[in-house]
Image (cartoon, rainbow, N blue to C red; front, top):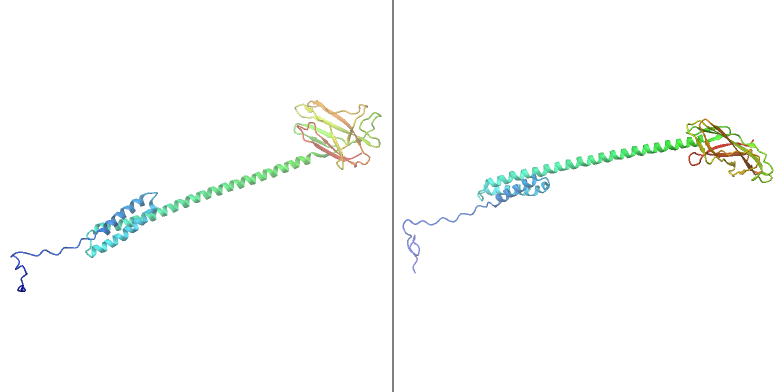
Length: 284
């Protein structure tokens, strides 16, 4: 087939009034702007939530990035949703600010709470230290008072000790004693002595002597044996001593020949209610 003349197609000349269709136009690339808007909304919503604010920074940052890219596409004519991209950028910035603000708020609250806990702990430690110091001072005072009371109960013969209820006890210097022929508890060669206990009740109640028997030892701590004879010269303090009354007890003891020359006498009207009081001194 011969070639068609210039200006003609193989099928002949086009009809009069016919126009060729324009080439198809490219689709707008609006995905970046839409994504920026969605991520921005997510970032703001998360930022407003007290518990989840710390998660808002990531979608907010992505919204900012996608919004900037979307605006670039709008400038190049590749996209038409400029408003969405700008809104995504704004929301992204707001979401980032909410994330930073929430972080600062949380840190400040945690720091304040930690400071309160530390101050409470310091206050408790200070109170415990103060209580410990007071307890130590109280214990020291009690120990000092106990030592003073103990020292007050250590007397020499002839001195008087007064109990809290007004009972006064005096033990005279032990005197030599000559037992009779029927004495018990006095081996041959021992020396005998007599201990005199004087009790005066200056209190308001009667005193019951339940265990009013002196315990006698020599200076080395050896017990001295109680001596009993039938001469009637010995008297045991027993029974009630009425207020304002006076009673005298006399007791004899047998000392071995090698006994130390100092005597220690311990006495209590009733060991269940009264502390022992101690008198010491040389033999006469």
